[in-house]
Each structure stands twice: as structure tokens, then as C-alpha cells.
View 1 (tube, chains in turn red, yellow):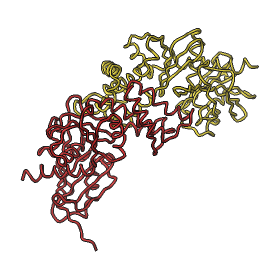
View 2: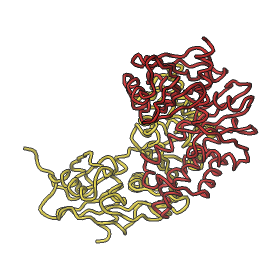
View 3: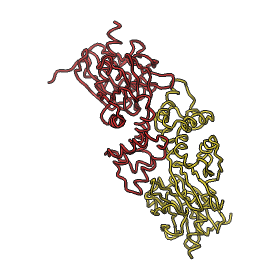
View 4: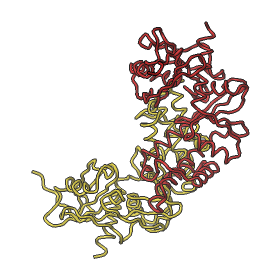
Length: 303
Length: 303
């Protein structure tokens, strides 16, 4: 029989597609667990049971504190956590929303950030930014967080100054899986030269991008273009369009890319092709460090 | 009891989503019929029965000629009709593919067009172009055919010189219905000023487009932007991106837009905002005129 883990508190990263939890004692991870109960697939009443099911083994007799970030605090989430307005530090001591976890959990939800002009929002990334800054104190520059919705975030003196969201990841998935391009674009595979060529084209001539997407289909029908080449070209065109639009964020800046290898790779390759020096950081490590920082700020400090 | 229509031949427009047929005698329409048996939803063996079901009432004792254009001739269609290479007239006398309609129909399928560089293909639009030219002899200029995949076609001296396909219609539908924007973009409704503003932004600064899509979501969350405004802005951004990329096709040219009012409207508005004179033509009329021209060329002339 193994020793049962009893959590001092529980850190939760609750995105649209995944639910991740860590059993914590202070800053130390005792155990971790994960499920596919992402917030995108849950009705309001399903959040409590989904979390209880994942963490039940870690609970003692009393009420266990939970600190959660991500889509759990969205309007379609468990409990809406109002946005904080930038410029501001990524985390604040106030304004956490609280949800009841069947009387056994006290769940605090970290607010997202909003920007009035141009209008933009984030939810979850603020915690990763805070984690990155706690691991890299006094860091100034631009953080890129690749994902379904990639964020470019200008950070200075510990504050989020401005940010911008790009739907590139979601558009790549929609075009590759649900448009006519699905017949020609591979689900896997890669072609470095095709990516670099398409990226360069898109960045030099962003006004031509709309004309180039259907070529991915025609090149298959007429020239038997390989599916992995089409996949890399599609990524190159869309990443190039994003980098062209995000130029004010990365030109002449110090850049940190926080993300898993798959989503981060096109950004790192694209920025390096522009001669921009890039620091890479692990997404899960940043998230956990952010949740630890949030607990210190929101739960321990106010006591 | 009404007189039964007996077709001399049958004209068929078989796209991905609709099947349309006309009972013809020479150039005269005797009757018309339509179903949702579009080629996109049919397996190869389903095409014959779907057509027979629609036109059975029009058939006499012998074999009835059918002339068909569109997706019916695609690789995923009933019988693959090889592409003809541009520059060439939109229709040729040769290379029709023939499918057997249960021994009662002799179905000729009109080939599409292909372009080697930049790689591109069309299937169905060549018939509309031929119809437009038969209705407007000696017309030179650029034809825009709005749809799921919009085509821009340079026509000179009765030949298709070059063309380019844009996926704007499909991308508009995917983003509006399947991306995170679906929560904020209306299925119907319009806002002229929002369309014009977004179109102007996208055409002046196509490099910024990728940054502006998520704003449609954020403007709803933060400012309660109306769904019809978001819909018009999305259309303006995507149409603007297309017009920026298609500039070599329309700048200083005589433009004819062949399309139904819904799909054509953003193009007509966008081109007029650029001071480009636009002729509008009815899509069904052009298709039928093209099928009549094809019959003259492919069936009657060779005899």
C-alpha cells in the first residue's frame, strides 16, 4: 500500500480542452492529475463534480483550498471572474471569484485581464506571465504565448502594459480539418523549406495571403503536392500573417515564448528567421509557478 | 390534368450543395427542378439515382441527353472530367466525360479549367463565364464569381487568360459558425458603416488583419458589440483582405460580378467603395446560357 497524498492546497489549470491539477504543500508538488474535462465541454453544473472526481483522493477531513486559472472563470465557465484592466500586474490580491465545491473545496478563480483599446481579453495567460516573472525577476520585454489563441504581451516593470490576441491556431485547425483544404493538408508531418518559403512570402507580402490559401488545394490536384508540405505551407502562411501583424510587438524586442513544443515551434522558427533572439520557457512550469505566486498573493498575504 | 413536359435535353448545374436541372427544347426552358442532392454529400454510386429521381417525369422512351457542369465532374464526383489548361476559351468541343444514367440518360460532364502557375482550378464557373460571354458578346475585362470559393477571372478575346481563387466565403462561414467568434457574430443582420470601416482598414493595412479578428470577440465581451455589427465587420475584414490580394485583377479594369445577391453584395459594395464600376449579372441565367452554349458546341456541332 502506498502512502496517501493529502494536499495542503490544490493548484488547478482549467482550460477549454483540459483540466490539470496539482496536489501542493506550500510550494512543493506532491502529486499531479489530469483529465479531458475541459471547460469548453462542461455546463455550469458539471464543473464541481468534474473537479471533485479528479482530486477526491487528495482531500482530508476539512475544507481544502483550490486556486484555479483559465476558462473556469469565463462567462461560460463555473463562476465568472471579472477582468482586471491593463496596465496592471498580471495578478492582483483582490477580485477572485469563489465557487463552492460540494462543501469540501473552497475554489478561488483568478481573474483574467482586459484591454480597452484595441479591445482584447485574456484568461489563464495572466497566470503564466506571473509565473514566468516569478522565475525571471526583473524581466522586461515581450512574451508570446502560442496556443489556440496566441497572445503577444508587452511587460515592463512587472506590469502587463498591452497585449494582442491572434486566432492563428484556431484558424489553422479549422482550415486544415474542416475546409476544402482538409483533402490536401496532412494531420501530421512537416517540411522546413516549405514553411520557411511560405512564411517569408506572407511576411514580405501580407496583402497576398488571401490569394495563396487555395493554392494549397490546387497544388495537390495539379502537382501532387505532399500533405506534409501543404501542412507546413499553411502554417507558414498563417504564422507569417500573424508575425506581419504583430511586428510592433517583436521588432527590436527581447522575446520569451512560453508554450509546448508543438504550438511554439512555428513562432520560434519564424522569429529566428527574422533574426530575433528568442528565449523559450515551459508552459506547465510557468503555469504552476503562477498559481503558487497567486496563492501567496491572494490567500496567504491577506491573512 | 396538366400536360406532361417531355424534355428534348436536360441542362444540369450540379454543385457541392445543390442539384439544379432544366427541361429544355433547343434553347427554350420547359420546366425546372431542384434538390439538395449536392455532390458534396453523395458517394459515386448515388449520383445516378439522385439525378433520375429529379428528372424522371421529363423522360420519354428513348435516351435523353444531359449536359452537366460543376462538382459532378470532380475527383470526388460522379465521373472525373479532366481540366483544360488556360489560356483557352471557357468551353471546348472535346474532352467531355460521359456517365451512364441507368440506360435512360446520356450524361456529358463539362471539364473544368486549370492554371499551372500560380496553381489553380475551377469547375462550374467556366460554364457561367461562357454563358456571360454568350449574353455579352465581345466583352473583355475581369469577371468576379462570388461564392464559397470566389473566382477572379481575366477574360480577353473570348478566352480565359488567368484566374485566381479565394476561400473568403468558406473562411467567413467557418469563423462565424465554428470558431470562438460564433458567440459574437450573428447568423443574419448587417451594419453598412461597420462593413465599410473594416473593409477600408483591411485594404489600407492588410498586414494588420490577423490582429483584428479576435477583436470581434473582445468587443462583444467588453463593449456589448451587436451581433450584426460583428457579422458586417468580419465580412469587411475578410472581403478587404481578398480585395487587397486581388488588386491586380480589379485595378483599372472593367468588372462584371456574376452571383446571387447575398454572396455578391460585399464584393459590389467593396469595389464601389474603391470607385470601380461594376456590372452585375444573374448567376442562374449565366449558368443556363453556358449550358446552352455547351450543348451547341459539344453535342450539336460535332454531329
